[in-house]
Image (cartoon, rainbow, N blue to C red):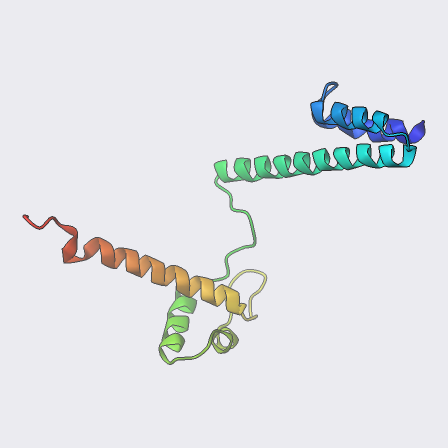
Length: 147
């Protein structure tokens, strides 16, 4: 009896007193004679609902954080001087790992450490995308043929 009460508490918390998924799982469990299988089915249904609930709450939190103008993730460690150095090293045909070893973070708690190759790749890729967008916006082919 104790296991049933503990297992029922999250279900009421997740979906209120009436929940079609839980009712279906309980009905199916009642039709099966083996009590071990019945309990397993009910717990499986409840764990699925709990995962969905946690995911929804996390997404709501991310959305509210973005609405407040905050970012999710670590602090930015790149700056313009690091980008210019990375671009210069890339022009010398150095690899991402070699570029990352040469760059040094100058701000935040990671001051004095090297950025990861993924950070270097992301920084250079974003720069290339912005440069390509700017080139498309200012190219002479943007106007109509008759103008």
